[in-house]
Image 1: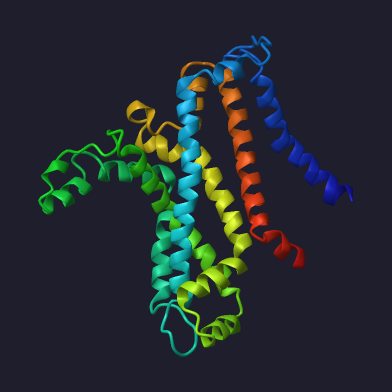
Image 2: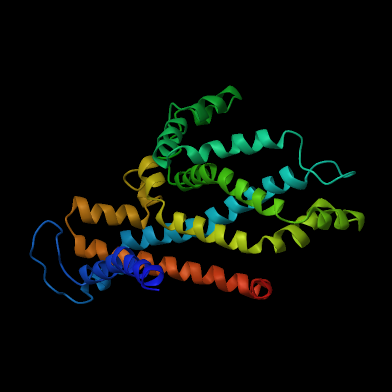
Length: 299
């Protein structure tokens, strides 16, 4: 009992809970991070934090990413997974598109590329002299000559969202394919005999039966979007024009390692952790209200 429960619990407390408690304590101090001096200042860091316009902008950007990125990423992943698994001919045995294995492998490629490489690669492609502007000018769109996609406040966030989605949609497509493959084929055959089309089958059969997988994926993508440090640091290291792509983790890094305000940065980390927990709780609640609780009970 001690080995199977006590040891894992001790490891969890030491390596997971302890750093959180330590960060929470540091957030109540004025620690610079580079000295032994540390004065307890209570909640002053938190009061200052919510009066800091730059942090509030970063928090708004993170919340925007946490809503938009999972929604688009998982919708595309689910669409592609459905096409590949059950999107083939409408007669005969239910099967996916021809050459589905090829699509599966190719779509997974972006996920095996490190996020920092993806960010740097797309920063070049969307640069003023990059591939996108050259491609658009081929069609006579001369207004895009030297257009700074990542340097313009109107397009910087949209481009960043596109890059993050590009990096993740293939992985979640493969995840959903595995989930759909776990649904007995007889169910799809029965639905087809009843005359249901592919859209109705996806809405009424596929999504409800893999709801828990979608919930888990939504939480993972959402947590990634609430961080987004690697992608944003590669695309716009300084937070973009007018901080339009600045995220909390970027601002936290700047406060801690550039300005030597570890206590203040720790308070940002605590707020980010709380927002992440709230996000996960909202996803669980929505899933339960949509019937996930009943499905979980049967299992």
